[in-house]
View 1 (tube, helix red, strand yellow):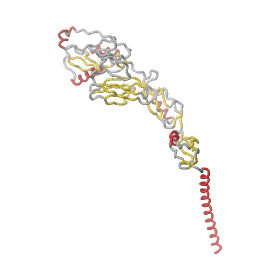
View 2 (cartoon, one colour; view 1 turned 120 degrees about the horizontal axis):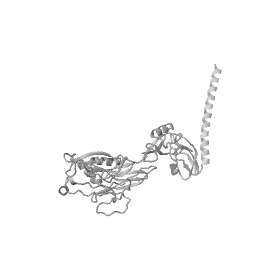
View 3 (cartoon, helix red, strand yellow; view 1 turned 30 degrees about the vertical axis):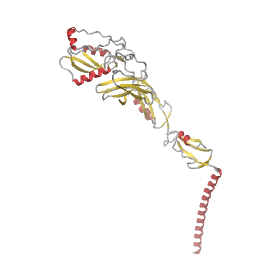
View 4 (cartoon, helix red, strand yellow; view 1 turned 135 degrees about the vertical axis):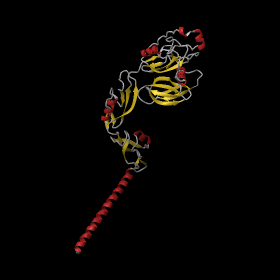
Length: 403
């Protein structure tokens, strides 16, 4: 029995000695490590900053001047965006001597995939191609194009067959098709309703609202005014509202007032001698006394040329102004105006920009031109009660500006 107890005691002593030996070795390892680190980094030392998760640009801005940054390797990591630090050596907080190299592991972003060629594809085909490539559609811009059919892709960013991180967006430029032809609206004043329909049909323009106003000068169903006004630019497929003469009944006073106010605000002088300038209406009493109704003859109107550059608008009894970078709308010389500033959004193509003045009296285009991304546009707009200015890019409303 005594012999058995002595064996257990010996086993216990051996276990205790082995444990103490292991503890001594671990303590000695850390002692030697600190000693060697102090020996090799003796002198003035620098604490290593934490660069993990930062972009390379920020790393070089924040690093101490006495440390050297070196790229150790690169690898894909969905947790970090491209060109961000995944890991570093030595670890943050370590004190090193001057001119020590800090080795960085840089992220390539998520898994890289090849961007498909979307040029000429429809928007539906584009969605399927991007889904199969494990990508998604980014920003979408629109522009008229005579070469690319409507709703087809004109260009893309990134370019086809380039590498892109998985699940990233691809920006596309979509065609709106061939732009509609623009012409000057001919004067329909004094024309019958049937004649007005025939003329507008030749311009591929539709008749919109038909309002009636009591008039003792013209026969019934004669055009008194139009909206848009004569000689304004119109596009194919647009609508033209008509104010017609009537001897029995008329539309509401409010509708006629809005119609007349719009025509007064938006009236444009015809370019050069291409059109006959309308004279102010004579007093009704004078017209009746000097020109009997049954003998009134319509003065033939010259048809507007189909293609003509928009003229520089000259207000009555004013001299032409010098060219200015500020767009000036048509307005009364005594009417107050304000300047509005708009900055084009970033992108990679020029776009058509329009400013529309919207008020209780109607809508009026005060500016139209093509601008590049980040262009700053300054437009002079007449002040109208309860008015606001809508900004359209490629016929899409993007912003409303207060006067």
